[in-house]
Length: 303
Image (cartoon, rainbow, N blue to C red; front, side):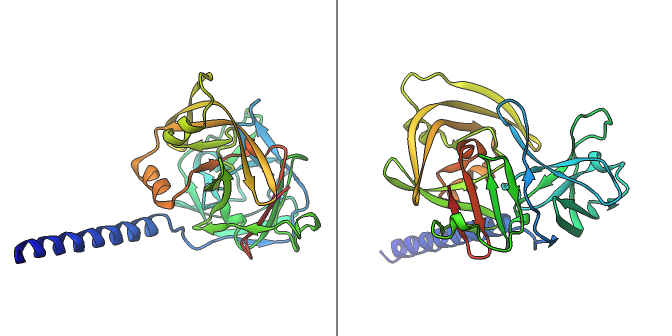
């Protein structure tokens, strides 16, 4: 009996340590570095630029002082960092590169963004014949400790706002800006769920796991299968029709399409499960709406 008790006790200790170790691992794994951006001035209204008929990629125009060229960064709230692409910035004299770190300043509208610690990712190209010069990604660090409005309906974004827009002052609800991930709750099929807003998954309404996808899809609806590139991985997406509503505080949003993905790494799947999220909401579900994020108070609004 004593031996059995010792075995049970040992098993429980191992279980607790494993769970604790898993928490510490994921906490460290997905904790971003300190925000390295210095940001000055309100931006004013910045027009959104889209790639593809299905609005597959959301771009923001930027410019460098002394350079008349229009450059673009993908706006991706799923990325914790604003980064440059190594091949795309080779001929830009305003960017000083030291191994995998860049030093520069640029403008998004009237907002000036400055850093000597921009990360550089090994991708992109430097061809002169491209119609749009996409040189990097604007991540969620541009939102941190700031107020931002994304008006999909009128096709603009405004950064580093000094105050909350009047139309949202009585319509705010809580969200989490955990590890630079925008996470908020909504009611789906009368059940409270957690969603991550990822502007990098632009062409999709809801990306989720196969189990949720199966539950939400309309019977016998057509399944569209596509392969897409996500950083260095090729993902396969399965999109089909659904007919649901998601209730966010005082705003009800129609969910017409639901997608699940194959090709994520085991770590990414584990992160989704670890966080308790139902899925990721892309830009497409909000194309008739305006989003407001106050990352100083962790309050947001949907109109």
